[in-house]
Length: 305
Length: 193
Image (cartoon, rainbow over the protein chains, first blue to last red):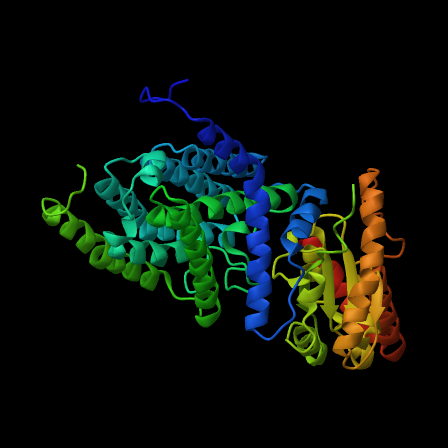
Protein backbone atom coordinates (compact mmCIF):
# COMPACT_ATOMS: atom_id res chain seq x y z
CA UNK A 1 0.00 0.00 0.00
CA UNK A 2 1.14 3.52 -0.74
CA UNK A 3 0.15 6.91 0.49
CA UNK A 4 0.12 10.08 -1.61
CA UNK A 5 3.92 10.33 -1.47
CA UNK A 6 4.46 6.81 -2.64
CA UNK A 7 5.81 5.75 0.75
CA UNK A 8 4.83 2.56 2.46
CA UNK A 9 1.95 2.69 4.89
CA UNK A 10 2.75 0.87 8.08
CA UNK A 11 0.29 -1.25 10.04
CA UNK A 12 0.98 1.11 12.95
CA UNK A 13 -0.52 4.03 11.01
CA UNK A 14 -3.70 2.14 10.23
CA UNK A 15 -4.06 0.88 13.81
CA UNK A 16 -3.60 4.35 15.26
CA UNK A 17 -6.14 5.74 12.77
CA UNK A 18 -8.76 3.16 13.78
CA UNK A 19 -7.98 3.62 17.47
CA UNK A 20 -8.43 7.36 17.05
CA UNK A 21 -11.79 7.19 15.32
CA UNK A 22 -13.14 4.63 17.81
CA UNK A 23 -11.55 5.70 21.09
CA UNK A 24 -11.11 9.49 20.77
CA UNK A 25 -14.69 10.30 21.85
CA UNK A 26 -14.26 8.11 24.95
CA UNK A 27 -10.88 9.61 25.80
CA UNK A 28 -12.13 13.12 25.07
CA UNK A 29 -15.23 12.62 27.21
CA UNK A 30 -13.13 11.22 30.04
CA UNK A 31 -10.78 14.21 29.84
CA UNK A 32 -13.81 16.54 29.95
CA UNK A 33 -15.10 14.65 33.01
CA UNK A 34 -11.76 14.84 34.81
CA UNK A 35 -11.61 18.51 33.82
CA UNK A 36 -14.96 19.17 35.51
CA UNK A 37 -13.95 17.19 38.60
CA UNK A 38 -10.61 19.01 38.95
CA UNK A 39 -12.35 22.36 38.36
CA UNK A 40 -14.86 21.53 41.11
CA UNK A 41 -12.08 20.56 43.52
CA UNK A 42 -10.29 23.83 42.76
CA UNK A 43 -13.49 25.68 43.70
CA UNK A 44 -13.91 23.66 46.92
CA UNK A 45 -16.82 21.60 45.54
CA UNK A 46 -17.30 17.86 45.27
CA UNK A 47 -18.06 18.01 41.57
CA UNK A 48 -19.96 15.71 39.22
CA UNK A 49 -19.00 12.07 38.52
CA UNK A 50 -16.10 11.64 36.12
CA UNK A 51 -18.49 10.04 33.60
CA UNK A 52 -20.82 13.07 33.71
CA UNK A 53 -20.04 14.27 30.13
CA UNK A 54 -21.22 10.87 28.83
CA UNK A 55 -24.45 11.17 30.82
CA UNK A 56 -24.94 14.66 29.38
CA UNK A 57 -24.44 13.55 25.78
CA UNK A 58 -26.56 10.43 26.38
CA UNK A 59 -29.36 12.63 27.62
CA UNK A 60 -29.03 15.10 24.74
CA UNK A 61 -29.31 12.22 22.26
CA UNK A 62 -32.61 11.20 23.89
CA UNK A 63 -34.11 14.68 23.86
CA UNK A 64 -36.72 15.86 21.39
CA UNK A 65 -35.20 17.31 18.22
CA UNK A 66 -35.82 21.03 17.87
CA UNK A 67 -34.09 22.65 14.92
CA UNK A 68 -33.93 26.25 13.86
CA UNK A 69 -33.68 27.13 10.17
CA UNK A 70 -35.25 24.18 8.38
CA UNK A 71 -32.50 21.69 9.23
CA UNK A 72 -29.61 23.78 7.88
CA UNK A 73 -28.26 24.08 11.40
CA UNK A 74 -28.09 20.30 11.88
CA UNK A 75 -26.35 19.92 8.53
CA UNK A 76 -23.62 22.45 9.41
CA UNK A 77 -23.02 20.96 12.85
CA UNK A 78 -22.77 17.44 11.37
CA UNK A 79 -20.27 18.79 8.80
CA UNK A 80 -18.30 20.28 11.69
CA UNK A 81 -18.23 16.88 13.39
CA UNK A 82 -17.25 15.00 10.23
CA UNK A 83 -14.45 17.42 9.31
CA UNK A 84 -13.21 17.34 12.88
CA UNK A 85 -12.99 13.55 12.71
CA UNK A 86 -11.21 13.80 9.35
CA UNK A 87 -8.72 16.38 10.68
CA UNK A 88 -7.90 14.11 13.60
CA UNK A 89 -7.76 11.11 11.28
CA UNK A 90 -5.12 12.88 9.16
CA UNK A 91 -3.15 13.57 12.33
CA UNK A 92 -3.23 10.05 13.72
CA UNK A 93 -2.63 8.53 10.30
CA UNK A 94 0.65 10.47 10.33
CA UNK A 95 -0.42 12.63 7.42
CA UNK A 96 0.50 16.22 6.51
CA UNK A 97 0.29 18.67 9.42
CA UNK A 98 -0.84 21.53 7.15
CA UNK A 99 -3.69 19.35 5.93
CA UNK A 100 -4.69 18.78 9.57
CA UNK A 101 -4.67 22.52 10.25
CA UNK A 102 -6.70 23.38 7.15
CA UNK A 103 -9.28 20.66 7.78
CA UNK A 104 -9.56 21.87 11.36
CA UNK A 105 -10.24 25.36 10.02
CA UNK A 106 -12.94 24.00 7.71
CA UNK A 107 -14.61 22.30 10.66
CA UNK A 108 -14.48 25.52 12.67
CA UNK A 109 -15.95 27.50 9.79
CA UNK A 110 -18.88 25.08 9.59
CA UNK A 111 -19.48 25.72 13.28
CA UNK A 112 -19.51 29.47 12.66
CA UNK A 113 -21.96 29.05 9.78
CA UNK A 114 -24.16 26.91 12.02
CA UNK A 115 -24.18 29.76 14.52
CA UNK A 116 -25.09 32.28 11.84
CA UNK A 117 -27.82 30.05 10.38
CA UNK A 118 -30.24 30.92 13.17
CA UNK A 119 -31.51 34.45 13.55
CA UNK A 120 -30.84 34.46 17.27
CA UNK A 121 -28.75 37.51 18.21
CA UNK A 122 -26.96 35.47 20.87
CA UNK A 123 -25.89 32.82 18.39
CA UNK A 124 -24.91 35.44 15.82
CA UNK A 125 -22.74 37.44 18.20
CA UNK A 126 -21.30 34.12 19.34
CA UNK A 127 -20.48 33.26 15.73
CA UNK A 128 -18.82 36.65 15.23
CA UNK A 129 -16.73 36.11 18.33
CA UNK A 130 -15.83 32.61 17.12
CA UNK A 131 -14.51 34.18 13.90
CA UNK A 132 -12.45 36.63 15.95
CA UNK A 133 -11.11 33.75 18.01
CA UNK A 134 -10.16 31.92 14.81
CA UNK A 135 -8.34 35.05 13.63
CA UNK A 136 -6.51 35.08 16.95
CA UNK A 137 -5.27 31.51 17.03
CA UNK A 138 -4.90 30.60 13.36
CA UNK A 139 -1.49 32.31 12.71
CA UNK A 140 0.06 30.52 15.67
CA UNK A 141 -1.32 27.14 14.62
CA UNK A 142 0.25 27.63 11.19
CA UNK A 143 3.56 28.76 12.72
CA UNK A 144 3.51 25.60 14.87
CA UNK A 145 3.29 23.49 11.73
CA UNK A 146 6.02 25.59 10.05
CA UNK A 147 8.29 25.35 13.09
CA UNK A 148 7.91 21.57 13.30
CA UNK A 149 8.69 21.43 9.57
CA UNK A 150 11.86 23.50 9.93
CA UNK A 151 13.17 21.27 12.69
CA UNK A 152 12.09 17.90 11.33
CA UNK A 153 12.29 18.56 7.59
CA UNK A 154 8.77 17.24 6.99
CA UNK A 155 5.19 18.24 7.53
CA UNK A 156 4.19 14.61 7.96
CA UNK A 157 3.24 13.72 11.51
CA UNK A 158 4.65 10.25 10.90
CA UNK A 159 8.10 11.70 10.11
CA UNK A 160 7.98 14.25 12.93
CA UNK A 161 7.34 11.49 15.45
CA UNK A 162 9.87 9.18 13.86
CA UNK A 163 12.60 11.85 13.51
CA UNK A 164 15.38 11.68 16.10
CA UNK A 165 15.14 15.39 16.88
CA UNK A 166 13.74 16.50 20.24
CA UNK A 167 11.76 19.36 18.66
CA UNK A 168 11.11 21.32 21.85
CA UNK A 169 14.86 22.02 22.13
CA UNK A 170 14.66 24.17 18.99
CA UNK A 171 11.08 25.38 19.37
CA UNK A 172 10.64 26.72 22.91
CA UNK A 173 9.02 29.93 21.62
CA UNK A 174 6.65 28.07 19.33
CA UNK A 175 5.72 25.77 22.23
CA UNK A 176 4.86 28.70 24.51
CA UNK A 177 2.89 30.36 21.71
CA UNK A 178 0.98 27.15 21.03
CA UNK A 179 0.18 26.71 24.73
CA UNK A 180 -1.21 30.24 24.70
CA UNK A 181 -3.55 29.76 21.75
CA UNK A 182 -4.67 26.27 22.83
CA UNK A 183 -6.39 28.10 25.71
CA UNK A 184 -8.61 29.69 23.05
CA UNK A 185 -9.10 26.38 21.25
CA UNK A 186 -10.05 24.50 24.42
CA UNK A 187 -12.54 27.29 25.21
CA UNK A 188 -11.04 28.16 28.54
CA UNK A 189 -11.32 31.46 30.40
CA UNK A 190 -10.14 34.17 29.77
CA UNK A 191 -10.83 33.31 26.10
CA UNK A 192 -14.20 31.52 26.20
CA UNK A 193 -15.90 34.36 24.38
CA UNK A 194 -18.02 32.61 21.78
CA UNK A 195 -19.36 29.86 24.02
CA UNK A 196 -18.66 28.89 27.56
CA UNK A 197 -18.87 25.66 29.47
CA UNK A 198 -19.85 27.72 32.47
CA UNK A 199 -23.37 28.99 32.78
CA UNK A 200 -24.60 32.57 32.77
CA UNK A 201 -22.46 34.08 30.14
CA UNK A 202 -23.60 37.49 28.92
CA UNK A 203 -24.51 35.79 25.61
CA UNK A 204 -26.64 33.10 27.26
CA UNK A 205 -24.80 30.14 25.68
CA UNK A 206 -23.24 32.09 22.82
CA UNK A 207 -22.76 30.14 19.62
CA UNK A 208 -24.61 27.10 20.98
CA UNK A 209 -27.68 29.00 22.18
CA UNK A 210 -29.91 27.69 19.39
CA UNK A 211 -28.58 24.13 19.37
CA UNK A 212 -30.43 21.52 21.35
CA UNK A 213 -30.72 17.75 21.69
CA UNK A 214 -28.82 15.68 19.12
CA UNK A 215 -27.25 18.73 17.47
CA UNK A 216 -25.71 19.85 20.74
CA UNK A 217 -24.56 16.27 21.40
CA UNK A 218 -22.85 16.17 17.97
CA UNK A 219 -21.09 19.44 18.76
CA UNK A 220 -19.94 18.11 22.13
CA UNK A 221 -18.55 14.96 20.52
CA UNK A 222 -16.73 17.04 17.91
CA UNK A 223 -15.10 18.96 20.76
CA UNK A 224 -13.91 15.68 22.24
CA UNK A 225 -12.34 14.66 18.93
CA UNK A 226 -10.80 18.10 18.55
CA UNK A 227 -9.30 18.20 22.04
CA UNK A 228 -7.57 14.87 21.53
CA UNK A 229 -5.58 15.88 18.49
CA UNK A 230 -4.96 19.41 19.74
CA UNK A 231 -3.28 17.78 22.74
CA UNK A 232 -1.52 15.53 20.22
CA UNK A 233 0.25 18.63 18.89
CA UNK A 234 1.91 19.03 22.31
CA UNK A 235 3.07 15.44 22.06
CA UNK A 236 4.80 16.22 18.73
CA UNK A 237 7.18 18.63 20.45
CA UNK A 238 8.52 15.78 22.59
CA UNK A 239 8.38 12.73 20.32
CA UNK A 240 11.71 11.66 18.85
CA UNK A 241 11.05 8.04 18.08
CA UNK A 242 12.07 6.66 21.47
CA UNK A 243 9.66 5.14 23.99
CA UNK A 244 10.84 7.20 26.95
CA UNK A 245 10.31 10.48 25.11
CA UNK A 246 6.83 9.22 24.18
CA UNK A 247 6.11 8.72 27.89
CA UNK A 248 7.50 12.18 28.68
CA UNK A 249 5.37 13.59 25.85
CA UNK A 250 2.19 12.11 27.33
CA UNK A 251 3.17 13.39 30.78
CA UNK A 252 3.70 16.83 29.22
CA UNK A 253 0.20 16.69 27.72
CA UNK A 254 -1.25 15.96 31.18
CA UNK A 255 0.74 18.80 32.78
CA UNK A 256 -0.28 21.25 30.03
CA UNK A 257 -3.95 20.34 30.36
CA UNK A 258 -3.76 20.82 34.13
CA UNK A 259 -2.24 24.27 33.50
CA UNK A 260 -5.18 25.07 31.20
CA UNK A 261 -7.67 24.13 33.95
CA UNK A 262 -5.73 26.30 36.40
CA UNK A 263 -5.85 29.25 34.00
CA UNK A 264 -9.54 28.59 33.36
CA UNK A 265 -10.31 28.90 37.06
CA UNK A 266 -7.90 31.72 37.73
CA UNK A 267 -9.10 34.25 35.19
CA UNK A 268 -12.28 36.10 34.37
CA UNK A 269 -13.47 36.32 30.76
CA UNK A 270 -11.71 39.01 28.73
CA UNK A 271 -12.98 41.07 25.82
CA UNK A 272 -12.31 40.02 22.23
CA UNK A 273 -9.88 42.93 21.77
CA UNK A 274 -7.63 41.48 24.44
CA UNK A 275 -7.89 38.02 22.92
CA UNK A 276 -6.90 39.22 19.45
CA UNK A 277 -4.10 41.53 20.58
CA UNK A 278 -2.55 39.20 23.13
CA UNK A 279 -2.72 36.18 20.80
CA UNK A 280 -1.07 38.05 17.93
CA UNK A 281 1.57 39.62 20.19
CA UNK A 282 2.39 36.17 21.61
CA UNK A 283 2.47 34.75 18.08
CA UNK A 284 4.83 37.47 16.88
CA UNK A 285 7.15 37.53 19.86
CA UNK A 286 7.41 33.83 20.66
CA UNK A 287 6.44 32.19 17.37
CA UNK A 288 7.94 34.76 15.00
CA UNK A 289 11.19 35.16 16.91
CA UNK A 290 11.60 31.40 17.15
CA UNK A 291 11.16 30.97 13.39
CA UNK A 292 13.49 33.91 12.76
CA UNK A 293 16.25 32.43 14.94
CA UNK A 294 15.80 29.01 13.38
CA UNK A 295 16.03 30.53 9.90
CA UNK A 296 19.35 32.26 10.58
CA UNK A 297 20.91 29.52 12.67
CA UNK A 298 19.99 26.64 10.43
CA UNK A 299 23.51 26.63 9.02
CA UNK A 300 24.96 26.08 12.47
CA UNK A 301 22.50 23.44 13.46
CA UNK A 302 22.48 20.12 11.72
CA UNK A 303 18.79 20.55 10.91
CA UNK A 304 17.59 18.86 7.79
CA UNK A 305 16.22 21.29 5.23
CA UNK B 1 -31.75 2.17 26.22
CA UNK B 2 -30.98 3.46 29.66
CA UNK B 3 -32.38 6.85 30.54
CA UNK B 4 -29.67 9.41 31.20
CA UNK B 5 -32.04 12.28 31.83
CA UNK B 6 -32.13 11.72 35.59
CA UNK B 7 -28.33 11.83 35.70
CA UNK B 8 -27.99 15.07 33.81
CA UNK B 9 -30.85 17.47 34.53
CA UNK B 10 -30.03 20.92 33.24
CA UNK B 11 -31.93 23.80 34.72
CA UNK B 12 -33.24 27.13 33.59
CA UNK B 13 -34.26 29.51 36.30
CA UNK B 14 -36.74 32.36 35.96
CA UNK B 15 -37.74 34.79 38.68
CA UNK B 16 -41.25 36.28 38.36
CA UNK B 17 -42.59 38.95 40.67
CA UNK B 18 -41.21 38.31 44.14
CA UNK B 19 -38.84 39.59 46.77
CA UNK B 20 -35.94 37.63 45.15
CA UNK B 21 -35.50 35.56 48.31
CA UNK B 22 -36.14 32.24 46.54
CA UNK B 23 -34.09 33.50 43.61
CA UNK B 24 -31.07 33.83 45.88
CA UNK B 25 -31.74 30.45 47.48
CA UNK B 26 -31.73 28.82 44.02
CA UNK B 27 -28.34 30.35 43.33
CA UNK B 28 -27.19 29.20 46.78
CA UNK B 29 -27.70 25.62 45.56
CA UNK B 30 -24.78 26.13 43.16
CA UNK B 31 -22.33 27.16 45.87
CA UNK B 32 -19.73 24.77 47.33
CA UNK B 33 -21.99 24.40 50.38
CA UNK B 34 -24.74 22.57 48.44
CA UNK B 35 -23.00 21.94 45.08
CA UNK B 36 -25.85 20.61 42.94
CA UNK B 37 -23.36 19.78 40.18
CA UNK B 38 -22.73 16.61 42.23
CA UNK B 39 -25.96 15.33 40.66
CA UNK B 40 -25.02 16.58 37.21
CA UNK B 41 -27.31 19.57 37.62
CA UNK B 42 -26.16 22.58 35.64
CA UNK B 43 -27.79 25.98 35.72
CA UNK B 44 -27.88 26.81 32.01
CA UNK B 45 -29.28 30.18 31.15
CA UNK B 46 -30.78 28.72 28.01
CA UNK B 47 -34.27 27.17 27.62
CA UNK B 48 -33.15 25.09 24.62
CA UNK B 49 -30.58 23.29 26.76
CA UNK B 50 -32.77 22.93 29.82
CA UNK B 51 -34.75 19.96 31.15
CA UNK B 52 -36.12 21.51 34.33
CA UNK B 53 -37.77 24.92 34.54
CA UNK B 54 -37.42 26.46 37.99
CA UNK B 55 -39.78 29.35 38.58
CA UNK B 56 -39.58 31.52 41.66
CA UNK B 57 -42.09 34.26 42.39
CA UNK B 58 -45.67 34.69 41.30
CA UNK B 59 -46.79 35.40 37.77
CA UNK B 60 -48.07 38.84 36.81
CA UNK B 61 -49.68 40.21 33.65
CA UNK B 62 -46.30 41.42 32.37
CA UNK B 63 -44.41 38.16 32.55
CA UNK B 64 -47.08 35.70 31.41
CA UNK B 65 -45.67 35.64 27.85
CA UNK B 66 -42.11 35.30 29.20
CA UNK B 67 -42.94 32.24 31.28
CA UNK B 68 -44.94 30.70 28.43
CA UNK B 69 -42.18 31.34 25.91
CA UNK B 70 -39.45 29.83 28.08
CA UNK B 71 -41.66 26.78 28.61
CA UNK B 72 -42.44 26.45 24.90
CA UNK B 73 -38.78 26.75 23.89
CA UNK B 74 -37.72 23.84 26.08
CA UNK B 75 -37.48 20.56 24.16
CA UNK B 76 -39.42 17.58 25.54
CA UNK B 77 -39.23 15.90 28.01
CA UNK B 78 -39.40 18.80 30.45
CA UNK B 79 -40.52 19.46 34.01
CA UNK B 80 -41.65 22.64 35.75
CA UNK B 81 -40.83 23.14 39.41
CA UNK B 82 -42.50 26.03 41.25
CA UNK B 83 -40.17 27.24 44.00
CA UNK B 84 -41.52 29.14 47.01
CA UNK B 85 -45.03 30.00 48.08
CA UNK B 86 -45.35 32.87 45.57
CA UNK B 87 -44.70 30.55 42.64
CA UNK B 88 -47.02 27.97 44.19
CA UNK B 89 -50.06 30.14 44.81
CA UNK B 90 -49.18 33.81 44.54
CA UNK B 91 -48.22 34.02 48.21
CA UNK B 92 -48.61 37.38 49.90
CA UNK B 93 -48.93 38.98 46.46
CA UNK B 94 -51.98 36.88 45.67
CA UNK B 95 -54.48 39.72 46.15
CA UNK B 96 -52.49 42.24 44.08
CA UNK B 97 -54.33 43.60 41.03
CA UNK B 98 -51.53 42.58 38.67
CA UNK B 99 -50.96 39.05 39.96
CA UNK B 100 -52.63 36.11 38.23
CA UNK B 101 -51.48 33.67 40.92
CA UNK B 102 -48.97 30.84 40.90
CA UNK B 103 -47.07 29.51 37.91
CA UNK B 104 -49.67 26.78 37.44
CA UNK B 105 -52.01 29.45 36.05
CA UNK B 106 -49.74 29.75 32.99
CA UNK B 107 -47.83 26.51 32.47
CA UNK B 108 -48.41 23.00 33.83
CA UNK B 109 -46.42 22.56 37.04
CA UNK B 110 -45.09 19.14 38.08
CA UNK B 111 -43.59 19.85 41.49
CA UNK B 112 -44.47 22.50 44.06
CA UNK B 113 -41.86 23.52 46.64
CA UNK B 114 -43.52 25.79 49.21
CA UNK B 115 -41.56 27.95 51.63
CA UNK B 116 -40.75 31.59 52.19
CA UNK B 117 -38.05 31.55 51.17
CA UNK B 118 -37.69 27.92 50.12
CA UNK B 119 -34.53 26.47 51.69
CA UNK B 120 -31.82 25.20 49.34
CA UNK B 121 -32.35 21.70 50.77
CA UNK B 122 -36.05 21.92 49.88
CA UNK B 123 -35.20 23.18 46.38
CA UNK B 124 -32.79 20.30 45.78
CA UNK B 125 -35.45 17.93 47.14
CA UNK B 126 -37.99 19.39 44.72
CA UNK B 127 -35.65 19.03 41.76
CA UNK B 128 -34.89 15.42 42.71
CA UNK B 129 -38.66 14.79 42.92
CA UNK B 130 -38.93 16.37 39.48
CA UNK B 131 -36.42 13.82 38.18
CA UNK B 132 -38.97 11.05 38.76
CA UNK B 133 -41.51 12.93 36.65
CA UNK B 134 -38.83 13.58 34.05
CA UNK B 135 -38.04 9.85 33.82
CA UNK B 136 -41.75 9.06 33.33
CA UNK B 137 -42.03 11.67 30.59
CA UNK B 138 -38.85 10.33 28.97
CA UNK B 139 -40.39 6.86 28.88
CA UNK B 140 -43.59 8.30 27.39
CA UNK B 141 -41.59 10.24 24.78
CA UNK B 142 -39.74 7.07 23.81
CA UNK B 143 -43.17 5.61 22.98
CA UNK B 144 -43.96 8.68 20.90
CA UNK B 145 -46.18 10.45 23.40
CA UNK B 146 -45.40 14.12 23.70
CA UNK B 147 -45.81 16.03 26.92
CA UNK B 148 -49.59 15.90 27.38
CA UNK B 149 -51.35 19.14 27.99
CA UNK B 150 -52.47 19.21 31.57
CA UNK B 151 -56.19 19.97 31.87
CA UNK B 152 -56.68 23.30 33.56
CA UNK B 153 -53.37 24.69 32.36
CA UNK B 154 -53.48 27.99 30.54
CA UNK B 155 -56.61 28.79 32.54
CA UNK B 156 -55.29 32.24 33.42
CA UNK B 157 -57.08 33.74 30.43
CA UNK B 158 -60.43 32.52 31.72
CA UNK B 159 -59.53 33.71 35.22
CA UNK B 160 -58.56 37.13 33.90
CA UNK B 161 -61.85 37.43 32.01
CA UNK B 162 -63.78 36.47 35.15
CA UNK B 163 -61.92 39.08 37.18
CA UNK B 164 -62.64 41.74 34.59
CA UNK B 165 -66.32 40.84 34.51
CA UNK B 166 -66.55 40.89 38.31
CA UNK B 167 -64.86 44.29 38.37
CA UNK B 168 -67.25 45.62 35.75
CA UNK B 169 -70.24 44.37 37.76
CA UNK B 170 -68.88 45.99 40.89
CA UNK B 171 -68.56 49.32 39.11
CA UNK B 172 -72.03 48.93 37.65
CA UNK B 173 -73.47 48.36 41.15
CA UNK B 174 -71.65 51.31 42.68
CA UNK B 175 -72.20 53.87 39.96
CA UNK B 176 -74.66 52.75 37.28
CA UNK B 177 -74.50 56.02 35.33
CA UNK B 178 -70.69 56.12 35.17
CA UNK B 179 -70.63 52.49 34.13
CA UNK B 180 -73.18 53.12 31.38
CA UNK B 181 -71.11 56.04 30.08
CA UNK B 182 -67.95 53.96 30.15
CA UNK B 183 -69.67 51.12 28.31
CA UNK B 184 -70.92 53.57 25.69
CA UNK B 185 -67.39 54.96 25.24
CA UNK B 186 -65.99 51.47 24.86
CA UNK B 187 -68.60 50.68 22.21
CA UNK B 188 -67.63 53.83 20.32
CA UNK B 189 -63.97 52.89 20.47
CA UNK B 190 -64.74 49.42 19.19
CA UNK B 191 -66.76 50.85 16.29
CA UNK B 192 -63.90 53.23 15.48
CA UNK B 193 -61.48 50.31 15.40
